[in-house]
Amino acid sequence: MKRQNQSSVVEFILLGFSNFPELQGQLFGIFLIIYLLTLIGNAVIIVVICLEQSLHVPMYLFLQNLSVVDVSISAVIMPEMLVVLSNEKTSISFVSCFAQMYFILFFGGTECFLLGTMAYDRFAAICSPLNYPMIMNKRVFMKLVTGSWTLGFMLGTVQTTWVSSFPFCGPSEINHISCETPAVLELACADTFLFEIYAFTGTILIIMLPFMLIILSYIRILFAILKMPSTTGRQKAFSTCASHLTSVTLFYGTASMTYLQPKSGYSPETKKLMSLSYSLLTPLLNPLIYSLRNSELKRALIKLRQRKVDLHTF
Image (cartoon, rainbow, N blue to C red; front, side, top):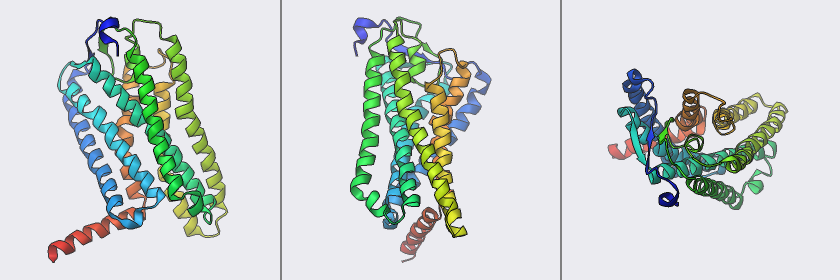
């Protein structure tokens, strides 16, 4: 990062919701509760899947990875947001801002690819149940998970390095809740047209292409479910897929509106709300959606709780 040579800005100011000072206290309390619930919910899923041997199958191991990503992206955004809400204006150093940008892109990109691989896993399980053990064997699973994390790492590295190379001469106020790329890019005092073309193309490939593949997978899954002779089997398949599809719609919908919008597309407050949807609500809802709608996870949790009670009794 050639900060000293190219930029006079050494720190940024995160404005957050400073336009609504009367709501700062209430928002702080709400977001703190959401953050704690997000950490607890995802931690429970990670621990339960880790300890319960019967859940060591691709479907739940993908979910475990998703929970790790959700905890990580919440930890990157929420503590800084709570600091912003506790002050009228909060400064963040140049390096810290771009470090936050990097991890938002890294974990956000990884989640995009993980949701895509989870759709493929459900497609293989429902449409080719007899061949599923061969289609989704341990080697394939490891390749898909490793590939998702690697692509997320590459996205964060390339995009953050490029944006940080722009000169920032002032103003230094970021009218957003975090150092997300579109908000920071507005402060660059250079021609960013080439980067915007790259970012738009990259967003199409990273967000819209997996989303379209997921939709196509679910169309095939829907036809396969409708052909099932058993009503119980259809209900179970619908329940499993509905959980994933809910997460996909929420995450991809708001993320695409944020990263595919033109500069003047939405007001700053609307952009903040859309950012909250995929950075705050999705990590909170994922464990609720999957645990409440999944009987195997609930049985595993009850079993572990019973095991703990038996140990105390003994």
